[in-house]
Image (cartoon, rainbow, N blue to C red; front, side):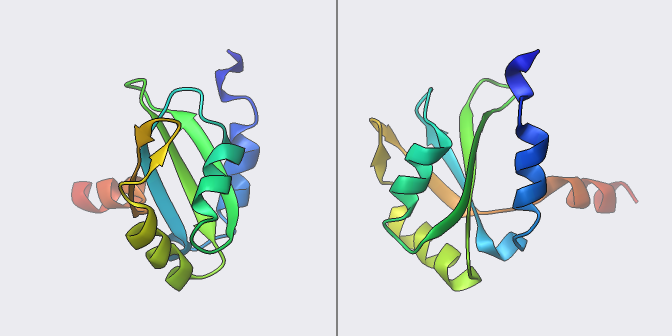
Length: 106
């Protein structure tokens, strides 16, 4: 039950950033912390927020927020395919699926 501890608080802080300021990060090594992800992503701009979680399929994924959309775009270009803790990261634009699903269902 403790799996989602602190998750709600983190999500509310993430909402302070526009979707264009967020970078989705996949392919994280199991056990990667938000701090390790943030430190890695600081190679391109200053990461203002980082969060890591496990998906329903057991994959470790994350999100990093930057101060501007330009920083987020630069981070995707610079850090996609880089290695963190032996895993190759997949960095991409943040897409909020819930809204898309609702629009498709309407």
